[in-house]
Length: 66
Image (tube, rainbow, N blue to C red; front, side, top):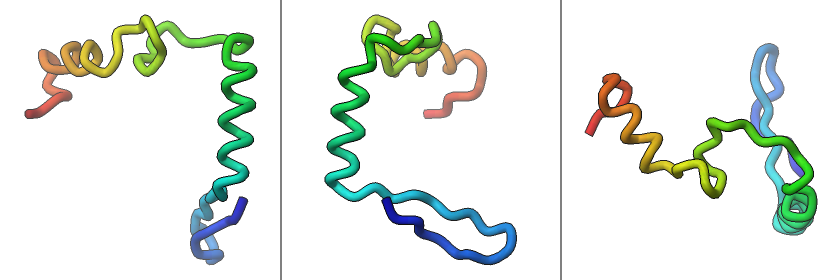
């Protein structure tokens, strides 16, 4: 992991993962994914409707503009 960004007062630094770190994190996430709790409104999870249903829900509220 490498921190990138400015180090001035009030400036935010971001963490940038290298390819090896990202691969290990992905493997760990896949191994423990079934053990972690999930929120009912997480549209990115299988069986939760996906992005299409989330976009359809926003169209009537004015939050989604085409």
